[in-house]
Each structure stands twice: as structure tokens, then as C-alpha cells.
Amino acid sequence: MSTYKQRQSIANILLGTNVDDDDPEQKIVFKSNCSIEKLPDKVILHIFSYLSHLEICRMAMVCRRWRTIAYDTKLWKNVSLRPEVSGLHVGSLEQLLQMISVRFSASLRYIELPIELITHTVLHELASKCPNLTHMLLDFSTAMQLHDFSEMQAFPAKLRYMCICLSEVIFMEGFMRKIYNFINGLEVLHLIGTYEKGEEEEEEIYEVINVHKLKSATPNLRVINLYGINFIDDSHIDAFSSNCIQLECLAVNYCSKVTGSTLKPLLARSKQLKCLLMNGTDLKSEYVMQAEWDKCSVQELDISGTDLSTECLVDLLTRIPTLRFLSAGQINGFNDSVLKAWAESGSPKSLVALDIDSSDNISDEALGRFITRYGAQLQACVLSGMTHITDQLWMTILPILVNVKIIVMGTTERLIGNIHVDQLMDTIGSSCPALERLELRWDPENLRFSDKSQKAIDMLRVKCLKLRCLVLSDGRYYETVKANFERADRTTVVRTTTSCRVSAYHVLSNYNDLIFN
Image (cartoon, rainbow, N blue to C red; front, top):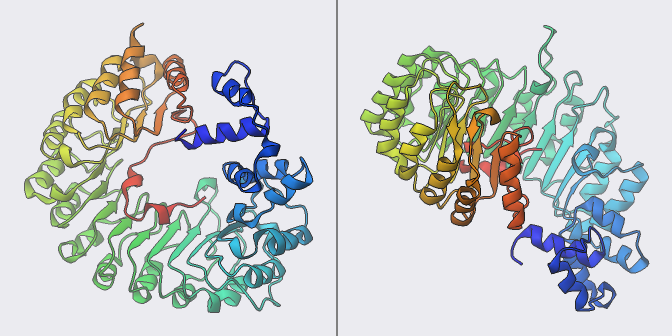
């Protein structure tokens, strides 16, 4: 069996969990009279490697042999101790210290710690017992006060990746001052704010972490992600650009105080900057137009949810020489004239990803002309959130999108007409063999399908063998598609829009570095 899910299913069978008497594959396993007790330790260890840490802990309670195997350090290379993420809850600091010493030791590469476990004693133990620890997440988001770090003298010194989830009210400088000397090897830094909590009341904004001091301690940063932080402004971007000469990717999504006033020096200093993500910022057109885009190295740009003017967008897009990724949704100024000027300039010649979600001022005719010209090179195409972009346009452009890996279509708004989803699915299956992720956001009430819809779903499933994620709105059609894929033992493919969304971000060159939990 080739897929992870299939191998995990065999692991559950051998462990005696989730056994279905009606499953012929499971009957074959049991008819062979293969008892797990007869398997060597290294085989059981391999089986355990497909289980979550929570399941491994349960296996450890079966017998002494399984306990020894379950606590093998090879199974504990990447560990999350945040209960809301992994389900693992460490009852006491003493228990964690013992785990670090016995269970994690030299194998540990990545760890996530919640606020109650972030103490100087724990960090000392990680520094001394886990010499290969390179990735760390510290979650201070729920903190109302910090532990005392005045006695902290050690910290993991080989970190390449660090993610800090900030609190709204807790000042971090006392902690940060203690670790500055240990983090100069950092290459990837995430500072995660409290954007999701919203701003129901206007309260005083605190700068809970001193970015100007932090940038001096981290000269080797390649990727900086400042997400949803209410105090981040242009001066902080300027600070990082003045010291981080190896900067490749800068993300300031949902940092509402960023206006772009320091874009010009940023592009002048950061010659290796290829990825610039500014979704949901307060970019000013005059500042964006002042930047020397024609001399920069930027290849990936996200300006979604900004108020840039039509004039600014034309100036920006026609000057960037090698743009391969553009996300410019939810911008009123993005209209047919922008798309036409951009296409005629020849600048999209390197484009592989286009996301113009909820761009209501772009007509389907203009989109059709643009996709006809550049669609064959696209790997990601997101044309969602627009009521006038229906299955008629998609049926026209899908045969052109021969190399596309990501497609997002449809809108949650109710439509006057209906979407004939059978024909759409059939066309996707026959035209897009490289497809990996697909999302249809249309309201279930607008989807029309026949009794023969199974044939169209079969076409999609059989032709698009790389498809790993198909997202649909919950409803009768979702249940039909889900059942079809489950019968083919592809149980993890079909998902609902309530729990999953498809994004063009998957084609970003630094996507793996930008992921945070």
C-alpha cells in the first residue's frame, strides 16, 4: 500500500484498533495468523511512526515491551506539547524535564511549548540535553504574566527557526534580553500577533516586543513573518532591512499600520528579496509608486485587501520584470484597464500563480482574454468570490489551464442561475491532470447535478491522481463526492469549506518556511 492513510490503517489493524469485520483487506491480514507479538521491535517501531504522539502514549500502556518501543527517541523528533494542537498535556514541570532527558534527548529537532511550560529550567534542560534542536515555537498568546527569567543562563543555541506567539499585554523584553546572544543563527523568524481576536474596542496599543533590538541579534534572517501584529509599522520593516542583508521573504500580513513608506529603502537594500506579502495592510499608493520596482528582485507579491488605486496598480504591475506570483484580491482599483495594461506590457510572461479573489470590477471577458494568453503557464488560479464568474467562463478556460495545480472557484453568495457541476467536474478531470488542490465555494443550493454525476466524479478521481484536497460546501453534493472517494480508499481528499480553505500560497518558493501553527 502506497499512501500514508493506507499504511496507518494497517498499523491500526496490527494494533487491534478500529477493526472492521466487513473489510476484506483486514480479513486477509487476520487469516495470515500474523500476531503483532511475533514482529521484531524495529517493525513495531516503524508501525508506531505512523501514529500521533497521543496514540503512541496510549500504546505505551499496553505492556512493558510496547512502552519501551513507544519511548524510543526516534519517535519523538517533532513534538508539540500544546494540548489544543496535539492533545498532549504535560501535568508538571518535573514530568517534562524527565521527558526531555529520557525521551527526547539528541533526537529532538522541533518542539512547541505553551506558556505554562516556558521556564528557565525547561530551556536550560533543552539547551543541555537536546543539541540537535533547530526549530522551536513558544506560545505566549494566553499569558497574563511571564515566569521569572532572571536566572536564565542557557538557551538552545542551534535554532534555525523560531516562532513566538505574542500576548496582547505581556512585555517580552525581559525574556528576549536573555536569549539575544543565543539566536544569531536564526534563519526563519515568526512573530504572531492577536489579529484573530479583533479590535472591538479602541485600546492603547503596546509594543510588547522590541523589534529594533531583535533585528540586531538576528543578522542571518532569510524569512521574516510578522503576522497580525497591531504595533508593527514601517519603521520596523526599515529596521529589519537595515540589518538583514540575506532577507529573501518578508511577510507583514494583517499588520494594519504598515503604509509602505519604507518600501523604497527596503527594495534598495534587500537585493535578494524575492517574496513580499502585504495582505490587509494600509498601503498608500504614493509610497508604492515611489519604490523602484523595475530594479528589484521581487517575484512574489501579495497586496490583497489594500486600497491601492488603479493608477498605482498599473504602474506597479508593469514595472516588476519577473513577477511569478500575484495575489491582488479585494481591491476596488483592480479593473479591466489594469489587467489589459499588465497583459500588453508582457510582464506576466513569468507568472505561475494568479489570485484575484473578490475582484468585482474585473469582467469575465477581460479575464477570459488574459487567461487565454497566459493560462497555459499558470500553476495556481484563484478566481473566487465573484458572482459573475460562473461555470460558463470556467468551461472556456479550463482546457487552457493544462499545468494548473491549484484551482479555487465559486462564491458563497446565492446566484440567480445555477452551476452545472457534472459538466464542470468532467472538464476539470479531462483538462487538468496535474491538479493537486481544488475548491468549489458555490452555495450547495446553486449546484445542479444528475443521477449520472458519479461518472463525472469518477473522471476527476481517475484522471487527477495527484489530487490531495477537494473542498466543497457542506450539502448533498459534498456527501456524494465524499462517498465516491472513500469507496476508492482516498478518505482524506474531500473536505468542507468550514474546516479547510485552498490557497495559492502553496506555490510560494518559501512556503514551507512560512508555515506556522
